[in-house]
Every structure is written in structure tokens, then in C-alpha cells.
Length: 184
Image 1 (cartoon, rainbow, N blue to C red):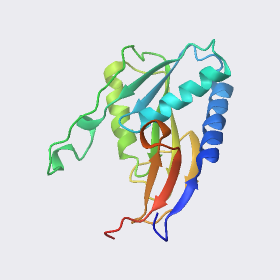
Image 2 (image 1 turned 45 degrees about the vertical axis):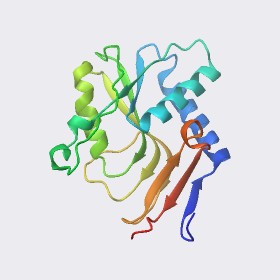
Image 3 (image 1 turned 90 degrees about the vertical axis):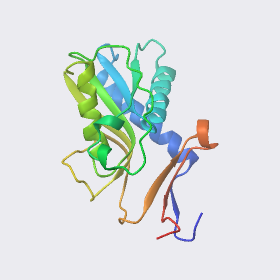
Image 4 (image 1 turned 90 degrees about the horizontal axis):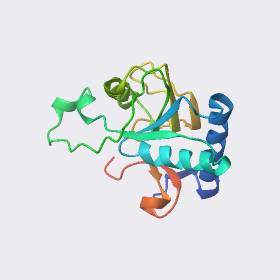
């Protein structure tokens, strides 16, 4: 970590945040019988799986449909990339027609990824309602009028700062760091 980097969520806070978000979902979706959880590729899928796992640890009787959605070809900057984009896998093997969808991403910043996710969702039906869950909400730099319904933590940051979410499954530990890239 650099001298100006700071830990936003350590491992214990990370775990408590996941538990809190899961309990908030239970309050609003009861048994999840008409609800699906869809994580946005690539990093939102880690959060979606953790939320689903936490929900099932609270009540193993929940029947929760979940999936992973790639938004690569729905992005508004898709054709502006210098290098070809490599899509992630979409794994939504059910219809979302008339269901309540919880769209999940790890960090909400400009809102453009979420907008892409909303467009991509329509390929799987017309949902009754879509709610947004995010682990980190970077405030004050929205390009689009998109707000999360469920927020793990609000973060105030400047443009040059970045948020790095590390996952135990892929990175060795659960942690969120606010940092300034070395080249800036």
C-alpha cells in the first residue's frame, strides 16, 4: 500500500457488510420465491455469490435463482476501445419475466456499467422490478441518474483515486482499498 492508500473495509468489516446486506434483502424479499440475483461480470458476480451464500446460511430453505451477466457489448464505449474487448461469460439460464431482479455490482461509480446491465437484462425478459445492490458506492461522479438501493459503504473520493475490491476466493483476502495509481 502507498502512503495515501487507505483500507475502506478490512476483513471483519467486509464480512459484517455482507451479512447486513443479506439481512436487508430478507426484509424486502422474504422467501425470494419471485426474486433473482444477477451479478455483473466480472467482479459483481463475486459479490452476488457471497450474498447468495450468506442468505442460504441464514435460511437453507431459500430457493434463490442467481446468474452472471456480461455487459461488454452493451457498453456505450464498446466501439471506442483501442484493444478488442474480451467478454466474460453470461450465465442466466432462466427468464426474468415478471420477477424482481437484484442487480449486483461491486463498485458503483459513473453508472455506465449499470446502464449497460439494465440493457442486457432485457434479453432475458421484462422484470417486474429491478433493484441495485453494490458493495461500494463512489458518490459525486455519476454520469447517469442511477442510484443503488442497497449499499455496503458510501465512499467519497477524488477523480484520480481508485477502489480495489479484493475477494478471498481470488485474491487471498476480503478487503476494500482506496488508492491513487502510481502513474498519477
